[in-house]
Length: 100
Image (cartoon, rainbow, N blue to C red; front, side, top):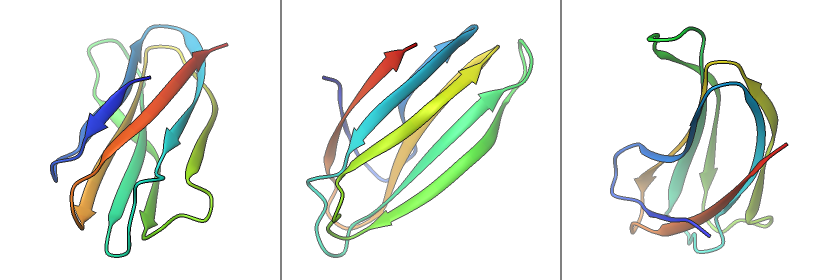
């Protein structure tokens, strides 16, 4: 399972170029009080284009439900999922992705 260490910058958790449908899980079980992480989902609308923000969620502190489900999304040109820890002690988060 991939693991990504936060460092205060926006880190790519997953990226796929091409036509496909993906879903995934992001595990925030290591979060503590004082930690905040932003999860962002981007879609690319045309080849050689830039990614456009599709969705953004902020998770703060200990999570009652530490497994974040990334619902299925179809991308024709590109999909990117990122995480950025904005407060607290930097964590390593694990994640997994499924092509449907």
